[in-house]
Amino acid sequence: MDANEIRSAYLSLMQERGHALINRAPLVPKDDPTTLFTGSGMQPLLRYLLGAEHPDGNRLADSQTCLRSQDIEEVGDNRHTTFFEMLGNWSLGDYFKSEQIPLFWHFLTEVVGLDPNRIYVTVFSGDPEHGIPRDDESADIWTELFTKAGVSSDRVVLLTEEQGNEQGNQGARIAYYSDKNWWSRSGGPDTMPVGDPGGPDSEVFYYFPQVEHDTAFGKYPHQNSDGGQYMEIGNSVFMQYCKTDDGFALLPKQNVDYGGGLERIAAASIDSPDVYRISLLWPIVQKIEELSGVSYDDNTVAMRVIADHIRGAVFLAVDGVVPSNKEQGYVMRRLVRRAIRFAHQLGVQQNLLTELVPVVAGLYAEAYPEVADRRDVVIAVLEKEERAFRRTLGKGLRELKRLGKTGDTVNGDDLFKLYDTFGFPVELSTEEAVNRELPLTENWRAEFDAAIEVQRQRSQASTKLGAGTA
Ligand code: SER
Image (cartoon, rainbow, N blue to C red; front, side):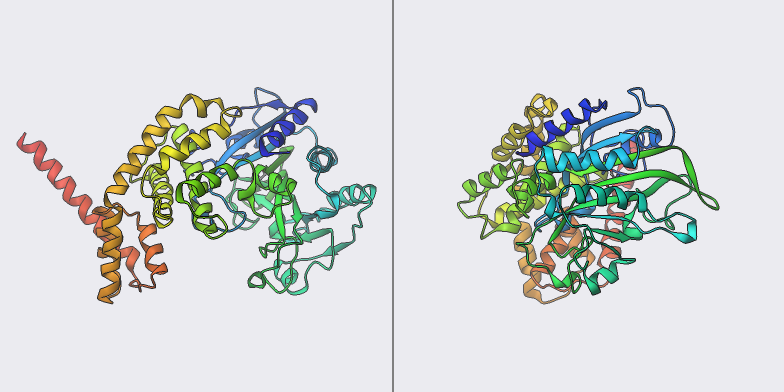
């Protein structure tokens, strides 16, 4: 199954099982000043998880487009993307563990057709301090499912990630973890703010034996290791608690909040540990190969960055964001300019966006008709940004080269010049400096912020002067 087929099959299955299908929320959340972007499927549904009645009932499903800008610099490895789709289903006080876990298993093994022998899971080991029990119920349900499928399901208690790193999972299909298996939008039981919902979760991983475990992430591989062999593909959160002043109380409803990474499930379905090989990303990579005349195999990181960033920028433009110097617009600018920077390195000197946007739009035309509807606006917005940055990119790179020759430490004023005169987002300049082994002053960030502040005050003063003399 390709990724579009997986999305459709998931939504059909959910509909068959009595879920109302809801539309994706835009990438810029409405009425939520706490965050710039929709970063998970549950975010737009928060108030319903806290107890409000949803107009479409208590069984809901969707595929939610998400953007995690904090992952920008992780992009380049085999599985991180800033933009992704999260398949989601929710029970608002309706079904619970005994329906959710078998439903997800059925989807993975029978609908998508993943090999049950390659599936590994984790459950919550409990939090005695807050009176939250170990999730043996989920472990029992998983044991039964694995056993029925003829897969051995030994259990091991792994209380911490460190223990996993030191000992490995010793073949355990089902492993218990502590904080790693607690989900809230704001961290573990201790760090969550009062009023936030959270709960134990059960995560599912797909095992890629063809990947060599990266020991930088611990001596041994195990479900929760970032060493590369186990890729998380979905997560059922049993959202039953609310943080209170003196600990935790049960929410009025015992909810399920499931989120599965469409791109990662699609990668598992083609047995590729590299998500960029899936049907929603590979055509973008192929177009970059065609434009640059060089191969993905020799330029993997650059092509992953370009494919990911352009896809994210297209959806931001679809949802009405335009590149600017603040908030969502700034993140969009960073994505576009970083992609252009990498394309420049591959020898693509012009029209990256004009060439790539139609490819991205074509991939999503059916699933999200608004992408096709807004295609021309999206192209216009992104082309304009490319033209603006191309004008100064070469000069900015020469400035960086010059800084390298002086042998001086790059300071906040240098970074400000790159930003103000050459349009380099500061994160792009510091990344360049690191790649060129140029030393940065210890306080470059504060120096840069101070230079921005001086500029802001200057422009305010001149606006006032202008107003007074007009
Ligand atoms: N909220 C959970 C997650 O983001 C599941 O939807 O993983």
